[in-house]
Image 1 (spheres, one colour):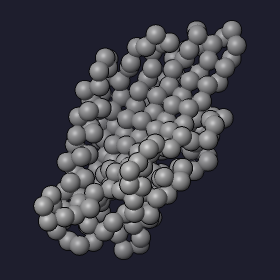
Image 2: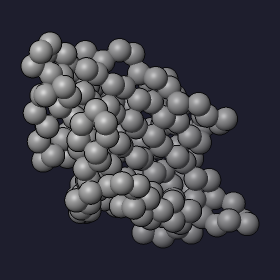
Image 3: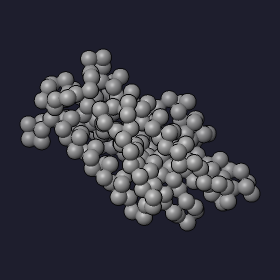
Image 4: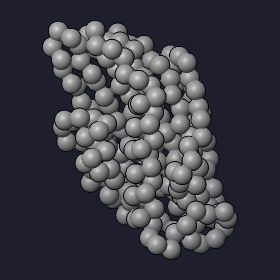
Length: 197
């Protein structure tokens, strides 16, 4: 789902990604990476990246897949905006990333230092992609730039959305109507690709 270049940029020298558990990899998947650039007595730079996706299928009881995805997208954005102990929370729309996307940033103080947390939630048709990315300067190293981290999180979200769009095939396009069959087209291959990460 993400290229080696993106991973090298966001989580330099990270070990192999850790796959999240899923009871159905055809509808949900996640993978996370972390890296620690240890500069000895000058401190360390920590980065953590998590990418998850959830695909909604249409059914007669719950409704159209992309309408269900819209509801989940809204919930994910609200959850990111109301994270526990978050300080200086800001949200902004992200253009060019799926049918809709929102970026949320905030500071989170932990015993190790101040973490700059960035979450980008994007919806492409019936799939919601969530990218969580944070960084911190530890043991005396300077706190990373929130703007730089946000640009990186958005770059990862754009690439993840492009993977979903590609997996949906050339006939898939952003949907305006949840009732059209193409809007409910499963994105199983995108979920399977995520599970391989």
